[in-house]
Amino acid sequence: GSLLESLDIPYIFLDRYIPGDAPKVFVDNEASGRKVAQMLYEAGHRKIGVITGQMCLNSSENRLSGVKKQLEEHGVSLDDGNIYYGKYNVRTGRDGAAALIKNGVTAIFAFNDLQAYGVISYLKENGVRVPEDVSVVGFDDDEFSVIVEPKLTTVKQPIHEISLSICKTMLAVLNGESYDIQTKLATELVLRDSVKVIA
Image (tube, rainbow, N blue to C red; front, side, top):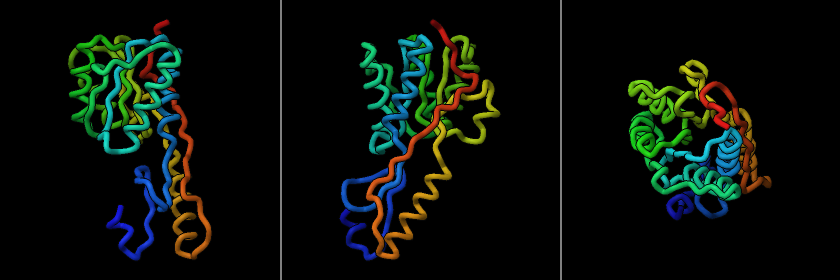
């Protein structure tokens, strides 16, 4: 932070931030985590596993917090053993799936779609059907999420609004006009074929 502040160049945080006066544009990750947890809860899932990205990132920390809080409101606790900490990549998805299915989870929420692809491929290779045996949810709505089999239920980030917000904020900063220090954007849960209702 202090390095950035010492530079005489305007900057903006996108989807990760540190405290301070720099403008920030990010999606509401906690609300997104809550949405996924609520959807899985309503589908009857109680043994839910999550695969996180790096916990130094606000996105991971806030998604996890949202899931935990939403489940707690229903009297369901997210067991520490059902949280697999990793990175936002396919390898983490595969490793996370291997660890979580040993715990008998009925659903896995991967904190990005790349991880979810890893989860699906690992489960299939090991004779675990998606969603008949284990449901899978991703985050991002990557272009491949409609191609993967089954089509992935995931959280869509509002890419257009994010881009627009960054441009508007940057122009305001450069022109010495007022701007919002914090722009928090809503996400949308896209329901496809990778989640099974079990209750």
